[in-house]
Length: 121
Ligand code: 5GP
Image (cartoon, rainbow, N blue to C red):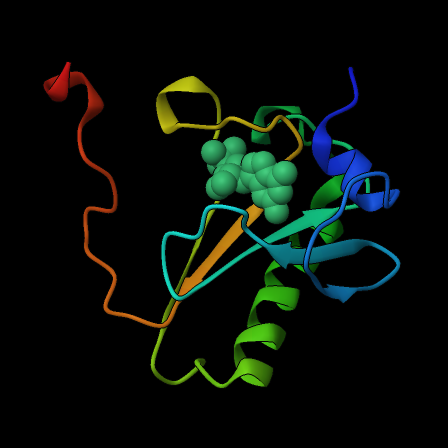
């Protein structure tokens, strides 16, 4: 798998506003936030898409969600509410092929979350 910019963020080769790190994961602010809080939570292991997950990644994926709930609690928006999203491949809008949870909070979030790009075309 070719290296993505998220691998470079993990290695501190490009800058990011990192808010959390542990042995398995890293969380940092999205460069183009879609809500007052928009964090990306990534595994340090490079996995391109949800389709590439293996049985052995079960605990790692659970860990990403635990990091999301920990950050929500520590940043104080756990009770108000938040959204956790992972896009997979082109039609879902995935642009960086290193899996990541989007953690969005800080305002009422609309549902459904995205406009229908096919209808707009
Ligand atoms: P995706 O579209 O793959 O689900 O999400 C990729 C996210 O990465 C986007 O929300 C985009 O704004 C964010 N992003 C892209 N490049 C950078 C970067 O260099 N730094 C940071 N912090 N976020 C980035």
